[in-house]
Amino acid sequence: MKNFFLAYTTYHILLSYAIALEKKHDDNMLVICEDTNNVKMFVDTLQQIYSSANIKVHYLTATRNRNNIAAYLIKKNNLKRLRQLIQSDSDIDSFFYTCEWKVYTTYASYLLNQQKKEPAFFYIDDGAGTYMQQEKKLVTKSFIEKLGDKIAYGSWHRPFERQGSLNQNSILCSIFPEFLPNFYSSQNKLQISATSLSTEIDRTKFKKIFSGLFNGAIPDVLIALDDASRCTESYLSSIKLAISKATKNANCKIAIKRHPADADNNSLLKRLQMLGNFEDLPIYIPIELYYLYFGESLKVIVGGFSTAILTACWLVPHAKVISTFDSQSLESIDNSRLLLKVFKSLDVEINCID
Image (cartoon, rainbow, N blue to C red; front, top):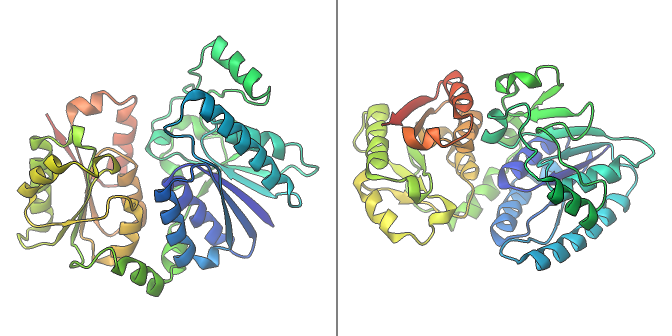
């Protein structure tokens, strides 16, 4: 069997590995749509600690921080590269993909639909956003923009009304399929298990990789911070109270993973001092790798209103998970009440700051 994965974010990549580990006797190919240094370091780690996944990885060139003309030319070259990868081998049996509104996904799907044998199609969920989907959500471009896309790329590049509708009879892959919006009820689903991520991991290699990054005491509490714009004094006070209530131990060991946007934010670091002594974790490593590395030691995980809460419940089910956010930011997120309902169903403690 030949499986083709197309991923954009570290979340998509991790889920692709979770699925591939269940199919480790197949030929698995993963195409990653952003070849940034942080993504490459993340994937290199996964390749070392999950060598049994049997994944061949290929990268497309990133278009971030490029002007429109340069980005368009890069995308055209990436599309050519994508076609070569798909057509370089015999027919692909299964296509696992994300982000149906992006040109790489629609093109790969178009090519695979031309095969003599149509593959099975699997849509991988997009994290918190999928759980807050409305039935019709993704049509955001005007008629002129849609026409421009067809001229620039081809008639195969077309918008879709909601996630999971690119291909008929596609199977929706999710870490918590039972909590997806009701309009997915008639669609076939595949639950992505976290079991293989724990059982297939090479702990010796994992420890060796992290030994140069983390030399502190293994934490009891892991905090996945929101970006600094939301890290108000009341937000940080709420986190401190959550830690105190959940652990009942003033000497608990704390590790903080700041948001990637805050790598050089020294003022935020000063504000974090109110939490006491803590380990400031390398910022470029996705939070999920810390969940896997610290594993059984974690008693409490504190996060905001994001996918990091979902993956905490998925990867560290024994830990107490707390979601802290302010009511104003909650109101600014479309359909936030849907995700809040999911959190409550997963027994996440909710701390809403007025």
